[in-house]
Image (cartoon, rainbow, N blue to C red; front, side):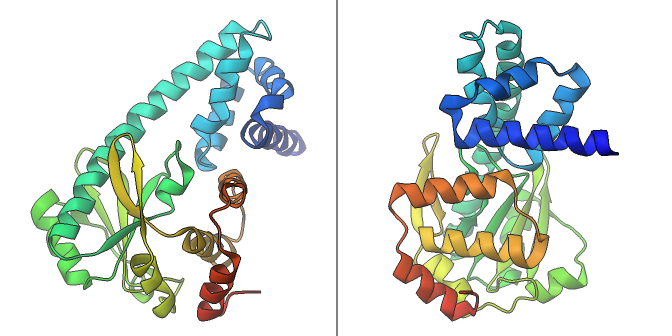
Length: 261
């Protein structure tokens, strides 16, 4: 057990170095060069669960040659290519879903999923101010989506999960409410009233304003999952360094939801 824990710690250290300080990632690349194929699979699985496959492997591709480790670079590039194919399929389907919901009068924001760009989460999270019955109607009629069974937690949060053929990722729609028990309504509306556009790979989506991006990360990590992923640290670091975060507006939103502390 101690060996497995130590190995995971080393993998997390490498992923952190690669994503937070990619220009100084030689140590992490050398660590990966020592791994067996099975251990590299473990590292990839960890990168996947932390939503940093692309961001962690890109520095390996560019740095492996200078360290005379071409095999490591080739391994990383193959993993990137596979992940990019998954992401492009998900994005193209997500664009169609968002466009159909908007056309039906369901104002919708893509939460969390695009915060990881150029990575993408393992499901597609949406928030809409529309009635959940209308959302379900659009998903069923336009995409033949299958509604997953809902837990009591899903019902409290007014959350729906849809499965669509050809899309491995679940589409998770929060209707009118956010929070573990759907306790946030006024705060939730800000995710649409203050939404902004984000264009990736030629496709344009509505996403939360920077302040709401911090809010939703806080709600999910501290009040649901109770742990942080590498992507949470990287995403917030990039958001802070971008200079787009309005701290007064962030406090206003946090006070509205009672979560400033």
